[in-house]
Image (tube, rainbow over all chains, first blue to last red; front, side, top):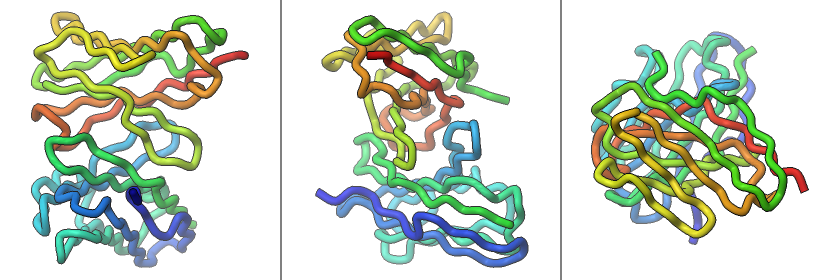
Length: 112
Length: 114
């Protein structure tokens, strides 16, 4: 079946701009996770949704970052006033608990 | 502060031999451990996991060993194949199962020489 998909695959933006990153989870998966992977590091947790609600947003670095999942399926990660330090690969994963998390290919964000 | 540590950034082994990838953790609340494999331009792919109530879990060529007293786990791949060349991430969660945030190490780049 179809895996987790993420769009766009690459996004280049200028410092100070607003970006939206989209994640389409595996059909039927109730849990959805966002992670960020910087160069030379492992994925770092950002936020976890169970259904439509954010069950854990402790990893969001500051209030410029926000994520939604209004219908319990597709999720959008929104970053306001982007900074060069936001450049990273943003990974989305989904799961049907207690099953493992399945990751998408990621969106590579570059802030110039 | 890195709660999951993969201190060796790379490992090179001969095809057919055993690959041993190590991982250490500091948070005693971690209860569930996983290994993911990642190829360039792809997302991490789940390999194998182990609960803290076990000390070994085996799946084909892959075996994970857990030493809770030492806060150490290792992934053994035998025999190693060239297609195993990838970055391997160790991950851990506080809540049993995968239904919670994962804390990852920095990864180990494995190269299997033909």
